[in-house]
Amino acid sequence: MFKILFSLGGALAVAGIVCYAAAFGSRDSEAFISIASGLFSLGALIIALGFYLQARKLRSEVLPRQQQSSNKRTDRLCSSCNREPARVFCRVHQLRLCLTCLDTHDDGRNCLYVPGNRAAAAYK
Ligand SMILES: [Zn+2]
Ligand SMILES: [Zn+2]
Image 1 (cartoon, rainbow, N blue to C red):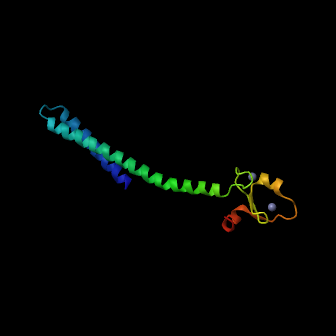
Image 2: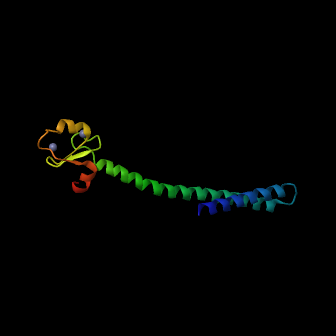
Image 3: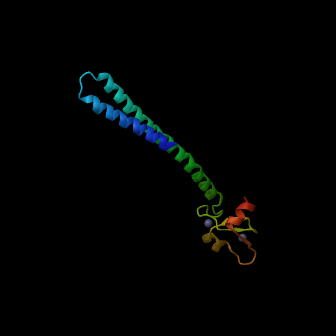
């Protein structure tokens, strides 16, 4: 789709340049020259349109993915420090924990841990 736009615009621009060069020598070629410059600017416009459409398509492809990943990240932050991504979930205390906070949280007897990515489905 974009290749067609690019090649069409390129062909028009080249045709414009060629017409311009061909008409340059002769005297009564004002109409021809204006047609040639018209062709050239139309070609440039079509190329620019191709770039614009392509950029828009790329943006719409990239942006949702970025938003998704950032949502996930905020979903699974450690509940005690709120900075690091949570790695485990304590089922007894209903807490998401990063590895640093896991050390301070763990009391060695009561806590029951579930891996963070498995817990995210069960506990939201
Ligand atoms: Zn933490
Ligand atoms: Zn616990």
